[in-house]
Image (tube, rainbow, N blue to C red; front, side, top):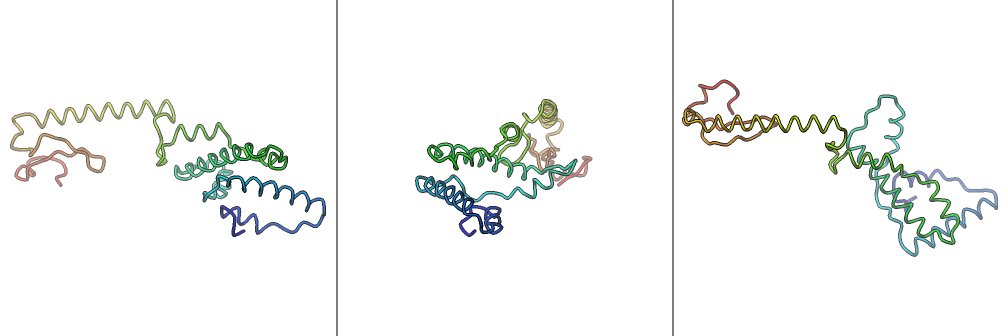
Length: 193
């Protein structure tokens, strides 16, 4: 168990029980022998990886919503499964038990492609997640650009030279901020910081 690449693997090792039938023991020894030969050639592409068993258990609940960070963990596991399949396939020539192991791995290409297309590396939703999201974000960008343009024109008016310290608009905490002179702060509605 201490040589397992993951917590789940270590738990799986601890849950194993001694085999009592000679044929089962011999089959397991052949399987382990093939795996050992393959890893002697090159180590399997396993490192530390997330335990998604709690995610899978929760996903059985109807209406369950998976957080983006957890989705990225699923993406990591699906990518690892894909890498392991390729590694096993490449080393399974003349090793039938190793070849059989590739049959039990499913990297769910449709799910993997959809998650990778919809999520950025930080777990944010990409515009490509859906046509509606793309449309909404495009509209927001257009409205934001229009608002920035209007605010910029307001700052450039000569009648506001004594009100604003500079002619630029910034964004803080998702809000547009205008550089109001301290002397004019009381004459304007809104929040002055």
